[in-house]
Length: 471
Ligand SMILES: *[C@@H]1O[C@H](CO)[C@@H](O)[C@H](O)[C@H]1NC(C)=O
Image (cartoon, rainbow, N blue to C red; front, side, top):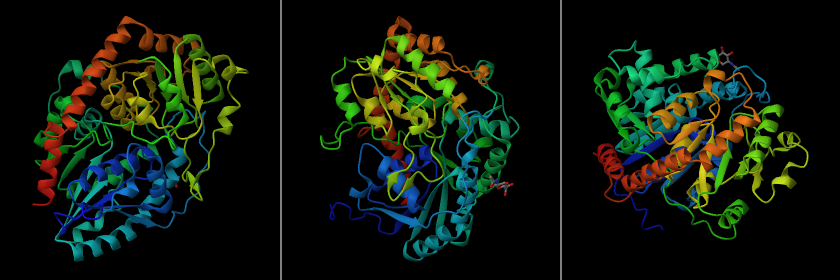
């Protein structure tokens, strides 16, 4: 191991600055692996708890096995986080706002590390989450430091966000615009202000990085390249960040749901998982359970509560799903036990999606989940709740045509009833239209994996980024 990691560029260091939310931590951790494989040292920074969370939850590789990814662990942040409110009118996880606010106190430790790296390297390349702009703002004091903004969302979503914020500087195809959902109900006003404050620092960057791939989003990447949006700065689509080949985890540690999947027929199981930021209401859990039961399809349902600000204490996952558990209909698990399983701990989502038995994904359409599903060629039943999810839903269903809508954003205030769940699941898993989407998703997944392989287009784009930062 040691000799392999000898750096070709001992004089360039990458400083990775993720935003402390699971979908963000995970994407930049995966990107660290891609960059470190080019023999560039990557310094991944965060609090001890968030770094540990990112490492424990990542799937497909072991972060501690790569010696040129160096973790810098800062003391925990001080904040009080209320419990998530499943009945709030806006489903944005405002219980995490105190954590977001507190993350700005990483400015000092990050600057201290930057000073140190700047003194010992020819160049320091900062890759930071767009929501951490204020934390890295002092990089301008170090003449050999430069920064690249990582947007954790789809090219489609970030393009329209920037295009609208810049006052629609050019015309867009009417057909595309007609389908674009408004941002109403996506964020709390407080978070919108937070985003604006963090984006203030973007003008100082040297370019942008996206976790997407030209074979998935080339029209929107081209729009992002227009000078009115890019300011003539460089950009790279380096996705998918997640590994595209999985299934190597050894028998000892292999999750029991994967063993269950081994016994199921090809494309017969739908994964049901809604990310880490929301908790379903009791009524919604019941409707979902009844709908899954009535669909008569096979499923893995990941039933968890939203993450709090600090998901690990003494290295253990604090929140078991005891609170959501009691809300299942009586006798549910017993009745469905031949067809479905409920996972209450951290599920190996990437490996489940990569398994031959998985043929669909009921998802909130967070971008991390979308990219994982796309790379593994799995079609999506979309259930957006907040942030970029409603727009990702349109990308998946209307643009890429590899999924259906289960929760209609126009009726976001209503519970999704069991009947709609049943119909959605059956449509995706047991109809000709669903089979067609599965074929398209498989084709797109194949193209993405080809792009990410040696000599593929995505790989060339990563090579071009590496050459640029080590120039
Ligand atoms: C977060 O910071 C903003 C701006 O400083 C402040 O107005 C807001 O009250 C803070 N919110 C929380 C939940 O701490």
